[in-house]
Picture 1 (spheres, rainbow, N blue to C red):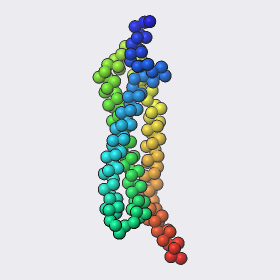
Picture 2: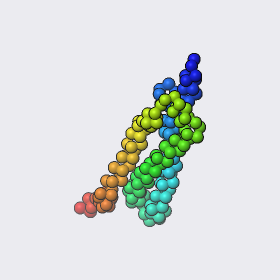
Picture 3: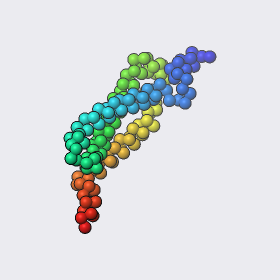
Picture 4: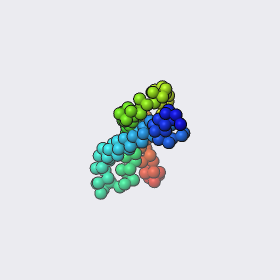
Amino acid sequence: MSITTVIRRAVFRGDNDGRGPLVPLATRTAGVSAGVLAILALAGASVRVLPWLIDPRVPWRVAVPFGAPVASVAIEAAVLVGWPIGWALAAFVLIERGEARVLAMLGERPIKTTMRLVPTALVFGAVLAGASLAGGRDASEPGRVLADFFTPVARRAQ
């Protein structure tokens, strides 16, 4: 067994699928940072709807439709900020452990290491697009929530 094989096995930790050391770490740190930011953003966003939820005179069916757009914006912001933070932390760890240097000594170009993150980027991009689409629908038609709320009331009055 050659020394390069031993180093490759040590760096890739038995991953024979060719993902390398960056992809699992980047996916995990980006997911955790986006999740933590989503919890914090949803807690902050709940402040906008909380007075309606606490007031006993306001029924739940009135307060909940106003919380959905706020929640979608909170999730969008969490993914938009948490994703690059997670990848930056993963790159930092990869460099601090020396794994990036080992990959460079083995002849792997940095662009190849980075291109392995494309599938993960597509997943995060899809989540971000979904949250943006949900929030954008409400932002483009500000009266839609009120119209959806008052339509059943108008039908009952007729």
